[in-house]
Image 1: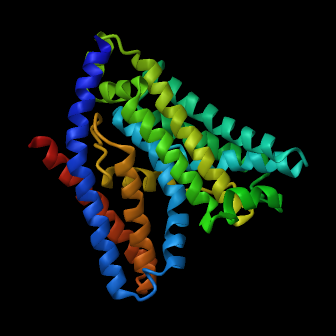
Image 2: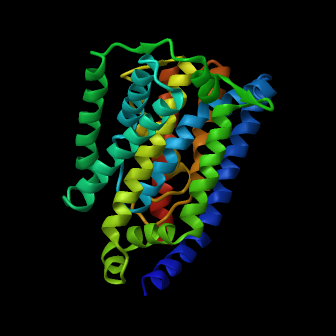
Length: 322
């Protein structure tokens, strides 16, 4: 019974998402054409690789936010998880312990933080906004407390090369990691039973529960995914700047929400795709890069991106009424 309801909701979501995906991609294409005309440097290979590398972190955390938003929640702790995961990994590397152990510890840290948020929402019945706001504050405090707000620098070259500054066949490693994670989590959401249950939970929580979906398990799972993906992003950020910063990721949860919403994820739950979010992240990345190239002030950039976000939510509400 639960799978029947979940599959029906998934089919409805996918039919709508195909149209949204095309719309988002069209918007990205128009942006690329405009900036290509306005700046001779935009469409160069080096700049396109730069855009992809800069977008990698946003795209990765936006995947986790998409899962959470589809269930009707929100994760405000993403930025703090980025920092704490990187700090934990950095401390272990500074102690001259193996890099793989440090990476694993960083990923587990993000996973554990996500599990706490998910448990508060699923079993504590605390609204996601409040639960993750609390987690965000605690986790950020832990990040500063670990080293008394002192960054951890001098990270091993094996770590920084693989996770940040290196490339494979001319493609930056962060971009490769991003693509792998997009493929994995897109498959889970669109093609597996847990993914169908995510849509069912967000479409109608009570109906999903009565149909046999373990809604508490689903909620914990999506916050775990969000925390884990934030940890991946934290490792990439630390590797790129060759240091773990306790203030890293500040405000990035808003970029994650923006990418998801622009990509067609509904703020009301029940709709969204990883592919759409992936394109949405590149809309943000291309906007920032293009505006930088034509000399637009960073303050004006915030205004433009804010307008794009509000416009996306407004269109989502109109689409919901149709």
